[in-house]
Image (cartoon, rainbow, N blue to C red; front, top):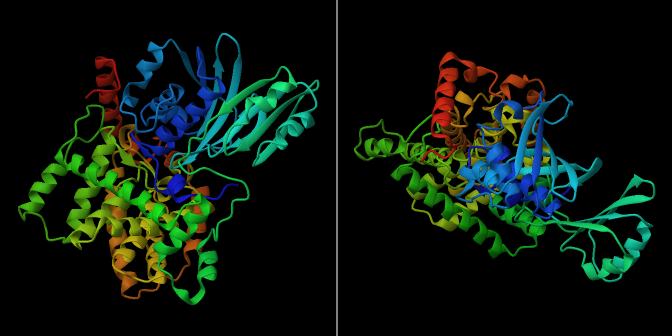
Length: 525
């Protein structure tokens, strides 16, 4: 399995939409499906397993928007995304979405059947959380793609060794997989840093070749090694040096992505600047009719600046920034899934607000975000960020855990204090369910993001004061995973339990559906 990347799996993608598990992941799946069809699609059948999360959430939480955008070849932050359904129809692609009983093991499974005038292909993929994906099957053949490689697929009716002999002398492959199709036919999958050149394949005669481009910002490569993958491994690796967590994060990401230290810091500074711009636009005001909560952060800013709120110090600024980011997300503005879109505000809201209160620089913010990113690596490696798998403890809990370590980093705390804060913050969030009101990722998501950030601040201060977390971070992550395995499906982002099924929630959902129907679009600006 390819090691987690801070910029692939934890702090990112830069995107629009309510949910990274739905919008960004579906878009990446759509991009790969488009490449499989060489950009020519006339019909698409999308199937969701009845027992999964998508039959009840694919429309309201942005799976459709993201998938359609991907099929059109768009990026995750494209401003046209809210209108992707109409754009798909405008280019003549016929669409069907059906619910089936197939027993898919993962709740976020996409089954696509794609056609054009020449050919038909099938693709099965899953959204694994935070915008990450895995293609598990193409044309009935079990295989693996995570979107980090240039993938060359070759359908060949001869000896597959001839393919290998033809390309091995003039091309560097990372992986070369051969799958039997029967009757002497084979599907060959080549993973590499670039596509297999046509000049190496042409001498082999008639064959079908498809080239699927990477969809992740940090590519994968052969013999990839990272210095550690768990918190315990990191502590063993670092020993008594007590290296600051942000420096260990740079060491990790340099190994993962072949970056320089400066490149890692600059990449995170760029993300910080995107987030600060989004916070400012959120406070200034957002407009979007198809949402549960409208603009509220502006009023909070007025009350805070006028001294009419209870004295919360930096906490009030944190609440303001968290609210602003959540409003930008819900109005289809640009946000960063950190670690997910549903929990996109707790970590950056806490870090940027506290850093500004302390008169710290964007580089200081970036280092704190890197520290958080490394904590996220440990979570993603051992478990998931997907609420459909783990409830909101996988999103809000992870965000609180990461933010606590980031805040300790801002305060100049030690490596062990940052880890202690992370452990305490995650412990406080175990069992948190995901129950979006009116099937929208807005409420109680806003309150849970504020709670996660507030929890992070409290635990950061407790850790700085020497409080004992008792349970090591890796064990807390494992405990959250065990809790998730006992959590009912209704409480894992299906909108079938908790606040989602209260009479008021159902009435709001009905009202929004009527509004959407009356205006005939999902982009009611």
